[in-house]
Amino acid sequence: MIKLIGITKSFMGLRAVDDLHLEIGKGVLFGFLGPNGAGKTTTIKMMAGVLKPTSGEILIDGMDLLRKPSEVKCCIGFIPDRPFVYEKLTGAEFLHFMGSLYRIREPAALRKRTQELLELFDLIHWSEELIESYSHGMRQRLVMCAALLHRPKVLIVDEPMVGLDPKGARLVKDIFIDEARRGTTIFMSTHSLETAEEVCEEIAIIQAGKMIVSGTPAEVRRIAGLDGSLESIFLKLTEGKRLAHARPLSTSQT
Image 1: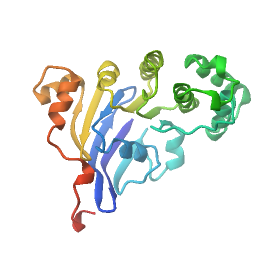
Image 2 (image 1 turned 30 degrees about the vertical axis):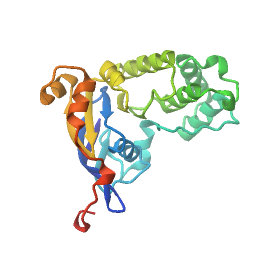
Image 3 (image 1 turned 90 degrees about the vertical axis):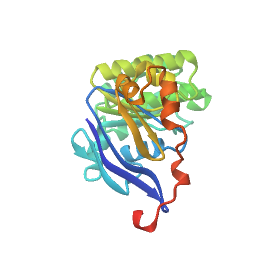
Image 4 (image 1 turned 120 degrees about the horizontal axis):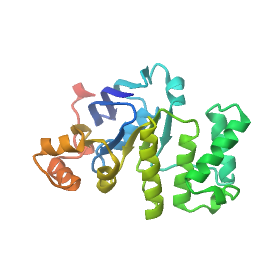
């Protein structure tokens, strides 16, 4: 469902993502882990079509993102780490606006889907309130509603639990698990190792723009030679490695 082939992204001679290869199947809830500056958000922005790779291929649902950007974007939902909303719209108005962007033409179908998602994310009682009155966690959940509005085959998420209270975080985890069971592939970047350990079927750890390890949690434990928590494995695999922005490239590498 998702295939990254030799993805590289350089900024002014610095390689933020370095020859990244990944393959993720349908219905997999995938955790993308790494310390600050490792290249997680850059990778996610390339997958969502926000940034163009310096080199490599991104295939989603068998389509090349660089060759068919419109077709690919119609089958993905994207939740960035700093989501943007229009504060002078109500929650329902915002979702109707997003529905028009996703080309959901049938008004009745859009109203029904909007209602379903507002109820699912526990926002129905605030659907007619202006977004400017929403808390950060409510805005985060509203953006998740928007990303799922068109029933995407792939959901790309950057730090989904930031700003959510424990109840909101539990709700989002359960929704992601249910979506994966329905066949949605979820690519989730997170700093929360506890969240990754709890919900992810497969994980990858990236550092200095390079893949360190990927696989099921059991496979990652075997590779690391540890049988402890994901946190202890993460710390062992990333210790002593330098950040990507501290590693300048030679002219021949850019």
